[in-house]
Each structure stands twice: as C-alpha cells, then as structure tokens.
Image (cartoon, rainbow, N blue to C red; front, side, top):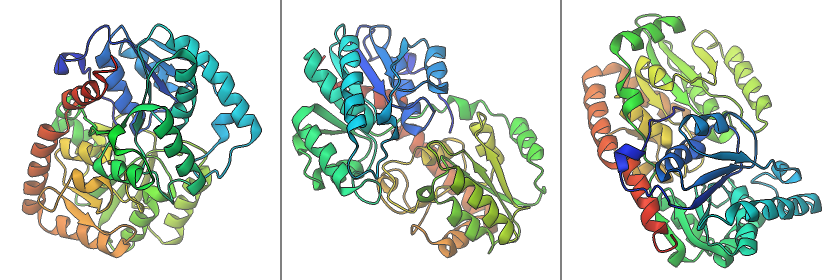
Amino acid sequence: MSGSGSATSESGAASSESGVLFVDHAGVLGGAELSLLDLAAAFGAGSETLLLAEGPFRTALESRGVKVSVEPLGALKHVKKETRLPGPAAFTDAVRIARRVARRAKPHKVIYANSQKAFVVAAAAGLLARRPVVWHLRDILAPPHFSGTNVRAAVTLANLRAARVITNSRATAAAFMAAGGHASLVRVVHNGIDPAPFDAVTPAAAAATRAALGVPADAFVVALFGRFHPWKGQQVLLDALTRLPRVHALFVGAPLFGEEAFASALQAQAAKTGVADRAHFLGFRADVPELMRASDAVVHASVYPEPFGRVIVEGMLAGRPVIATRAGGVTEIVDDETGVLVPPNDAEALARAIESLAGDPGHAAAMAARGAARARKEFTVAAMVRGVEDAMRDLL
C-alpha cells in the first residue's frame, strides 16, 4: 500500500497542542498504520505516538515529523485474533506495558488506541493514568476474523473503558453493536487518503514501471495489493487467472504476521495451475501508485467482509477501474456505477468481471473516472482528521 503526503495543511483543523498519545501495536506498515500516519502528523507537536513494536512504521512517522517512542511487547505480541484465551504470560506482559504507557500518557489528555492489542494496553494505562481512552476500531468483530472469546472480551472491555469507539465504516460499527457494544460510544469515520502520490505519477513513469515488469504490451494487467493472508483472497485471483489466458496479475505485498507458508503455497499453486508466467509476485513495494497506474484494473478479492478497503480508494485515486467483493465496508466505498462488485470467494465471477473490463475499454475508463471523482470527494485526509477531532472534541 502507498504512503501519503502531509495532512496538516490540507485539514487546517487539528490543533498543534492536541495532547493525544497515539498507541499502535505494529511496527510494520499496514492499512491501519498508514491511516494513523496521516492522523498523527495532522495532530501536530503536542501529540506523541507510542509503538509496541520496532519497525519501518517508526521511520515513516519520524519522516513526517511525528514524535515517536517504542515500548516493545513481550508475550502479548504472540496473541492472535483467533486466540481463545491468552496465557498468563500475556496478561503479565499487558500489565507491564500498561504501566509504562500510563507514565507516557501523563502529559497528554487522551490515549488513542489504533488496534485491538493497543486498546487492551491503553484501557489499563488509562485507568492508571486517569486518562480517557479512544479506540479506533478497524476490524469487524465477528468470526472468522476473531474467536468468540476474543470478541466478547474486546466488547466488554470497550463498554467498560472506552470513552469513544471510532469505527472505519458502518459495517464495522454494526458488528461492534451486534456483539453487544454500546451504540452511544460509536462514531463512524471513514479512512481518508491523500491523492498527491497518485497524481504525481506521469504516464511516462507508469509506462516505464509496466515495461520493467516484463509483461507483454498487449496483456491486460490486474493488480492485487495487500498483506498475504488467506482472507485477502490472493488464491481466488490465482484461480480466476486460469480462466483468463491473456491476463497477467500482479500480487503486491508480503506476509506481515507469520503467513510465510501461505505465500509459499500461492507460488506453488501458480506453478501447479500453469499460470506462473502470468502471476507476478512482487513482494512489498514502496511504489504502489506507480504499480496501480501501470495496471489496467485493481482487484480487491477478500473472502470475508472487509472493515473498509483502503486499497479500493487507492485504486480509484489512481484512475483505475476497481473490482471488489460485495461485503462489509466495501459497499460504502464503491457501487455498481463506480466499480464492479462480485461475490466473495467466487473465482468464476471475478474472472467474468475482469473479462468484461478487458473487453470494453471505454466502459472501463468511464467507470474509473466516476470512481476517481467519488474518492476525491468523499475519502479525503481532511475529512478523516475532522471526523476524529469531532469524535474526541469533548475529551480534549
């Protein structure tokens, strides 16, 4: 996924002395972290970001002028979304980290947790430091994303300790409330994405990027961006590719949290089904805007409901037609006028959608133009910053 430019000048709304301690459990750059990157930069020098893992996210924050520190997790980092009940070591580690976060929180007015693990730590730290806690919920709290035990624990903790639960879509909010979350806590704020990195890609640069990929000039190129994980649907696109002999597919991303075996299985699947010469596994790339502009369409293929779908907005900003699965927060971003919606986990339907765009370039271009206009109007960094500010205004 791509990075974004500064939000401060675009929004003009965030206070330079906002007093927020942002907390995130990850050191890698996923979608949640890219959104936090824009928020932390917009909230200015009065705020600080605390990461619970070292990694490239720290460098990205520092490059935007954000004050950053790291308090690494111990046993808690091994707890997964599907974990039924964390062991004693994880609880002990949570208490240890919570005490350190509480000390960091003292100069600030609000603790803002950007992930579930961060919220567990922040909830305890807020109690110790006597600071309100805001949870920015970016996941659909329901199986198969989370175990039932994990969902109940998260919702109970939010009802007890969260002053606000900001969700990235109405679908995320609905899942939280369906699981017993208090509706009075919820504020929906869609993610915003800066169009500048996509606007900066010239046709010549896009053509050069495409040529460097080694795909035939007459090929129709689709691209899927994101973390390698079975629920993201890379295997579905590979299956669709077997039905599309003239189509090449770019798989951009890497395993983030131990999914190396899945990544290896994908390459084995490509070889076994005879599409290895048309399936390009590019790994993590920093030039996502160039790769999107070098493609003919952007594919979102998640097999389970997506909380939001940042990559869909990015594809729209890149001026490319988007094919996405009709589930979760995706339908709040794209409709049948601004993209092509297909059922989840349906390789045949995905193949037909790709074939329809490849066979009608005029229709594809018109759809891409409508999508770009909607993304630039509705999913801006300024709107996201204002939304988060409004949700926390009485706390600040």
